[in-house]
Image (tube, rainbow, N blue to C red; front, side):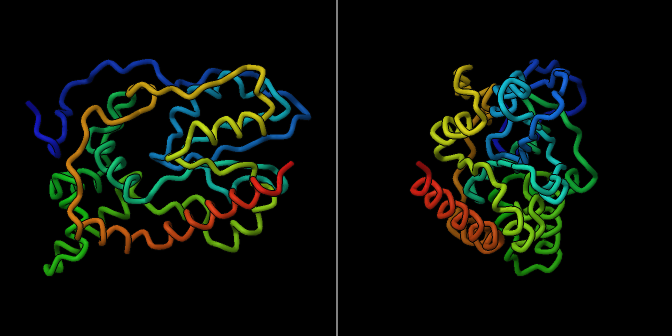
Length: 252
């Protein structure tokens, strides 16, 4: 039996389920786009699965972008939406997702940085604790892993800075939160004009892209280290929660 924290063998290719694959749907002309900024490990796979067949079905042309597409690439005046998640939860999910190379939906080889990181840090807890290690080399290796392992980066990668986000805020269609995704998705569907199709998010482990096993909990010190590391992400999460609450009160 494989121990938690030890990566799966990468020596043999494995079949992957046909989940979330993009189909070619002709883009309609003269229809305003709505851009999805896909922040890793915040529920984007489920959204893609449900919305991909409906991207040209409503009053918007919904653009389901890959992870690398950021807010500065959204043309001026076009609306956008995205999902957010508690940064520590996102870290744990992202660590084990990349440790197993994206399985069970994807099979994306490690980068050189990821290979070094997973050989040195066998668990999310070990990496988080190393952020305050008394050993300079251990601490430096942990910081390097945090910057270069996919899905561990700050959400500010997608927004650049506060000034950029606030300048585009009038065109923000919706922020969805992972801890209330069904409710927020229903509101997004309404804003996208797709109610008649009755789209519903998946809840099974594969289509929701959840880990096949539950990881061990983090130590208190590990959580504290991560909350310091992701301090700006927590500020942004709180700002967006307040923003959506204000918009909910204001809308008719």
